[in-house]
Image 1 (tube, rainbow, N blue to C red):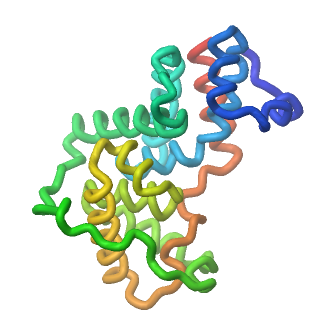
Image 2 (image 1 turned 120 degrees about the vertical axis):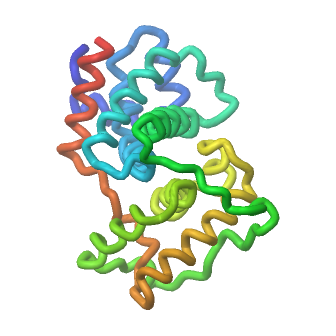
Amino acid sequence: MRVVSGAILDRWTALSDEEVVARVLDGQTALYEVLMRRHNERIYRAARSIVRDEDEAEDVMQQAYVNAYLHLRQFDRRAKFSTWLTRIAIHEALARARKSGRYTTVDFGGEEHQAVDEQPSRNPEHHAFAGELRGLLESCIDQLPDGLREVFMLREVDGLGTGETAECLGVSEDVVKTRLSRSRAALRRRLAEQAGIFAPETFRFLQPRCDRVVAAVLARIS
């Protein structure tokens, strides 16, 4: 399967995920690259939040994309394609982490009854994350407990809403709200008065890595 050129990719940017999926199923399989490039950063962050290793996160991504491609006809549009794809990646990442004994589900004790307001007040300083703090933030996120870390990554770093985060993780919206509140509190304790802790610049999935994952997946599904 050949890699789609940048010019050709640009032709399909106006199509929704669902429209691209339909074309892939209709035989235009090269367009699967459009979906991968469109969602690479989210899938990387979701996988990385669970396995906590960049190289393994890439392996998870590749397998998740292959799994999604092989089961593409099972996508029934009841959820957004991005949510469906994220759930596949999370399932793959959790399976690997649990198999190696690196993931332990924590009992947060009645968290479904402790939901709080999901939208913090923010000011411009929170969006102006200083580059020199990025490494510190990523280290602190990695130290969050299993269960809190994925919620924080999807909600605060990747910007998903509460409902979509709940759907991706297979938990209730109240659980998402509570775990988000607890993850914020834990990070505040670690970062103290540092500003910019919610900036979306962490765990970026930059072009060279994007190209590598896309090429590897296309080679596997061709």
